[in-house]
Length: 328
Image (cartoon, rainbow, N blue to C red):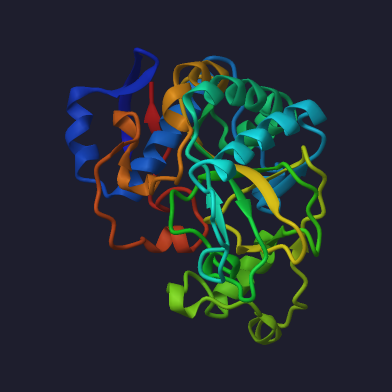
């Protein structure tokens, strides 16, 4: 049980008091990430910020669609970065059912401008939604950019799943092309239905057990199978909690889908300040497994993760026996 975990802010990061570090070292990765969120929440509230908002859409539904975040010039510039990869490292790429798209290797000369566009996209509604869910500051941990093509069969990422990740991790998909039934999209099962389906047995299935049709599971749960299908314009973004809601990508039938995907985690430092510090490190070809990192060491890789605790599967953000937790 966590009681009176003492910490301070040192060099804009959470530093645990020496007499509590040993207790934290005995925790598993999921509990450490939960404690780090609690520390960030208390730091935010001490600075005059608000606690988590129980009516936030990420709390009630697990997702939110934000509109008109960037303009046509911003979209054109980001798509040109994807085009540069298609004409260079990905020249000759042929999409297949197993490999229907590519992520770009970001050029150093593009990272600064991409960060400026991300700043515009996150300012306002996106940042407000994220902070309302977390009750803390946050950082953009990593960003990928890619192009997805049609294929004859859905790959495993395009079947229903929840990510085995940090329970409060947030993903932001910034669409650079219009998305619809034919142009590639994203589908999400709202939190209430995801909980019902988890109770019916479809929780964190192994990769080989993922399905594209959950009609039988919904029927067993006594609910209609009616996933939310994202209809969006270029410049819109889906903000969602991938560990808490079932989701899947929908591959395009015609044309290609371009998008950026940003991974969000708690931080004691405001997101826009961290953005300026992390320009050279956050643009990647693939996202890391963040549950395997140490949040108290700046999310440096640390863990080998082989087990998910029950409280994560029960849609909680912290162990149920914890009290008030971290205190300044």
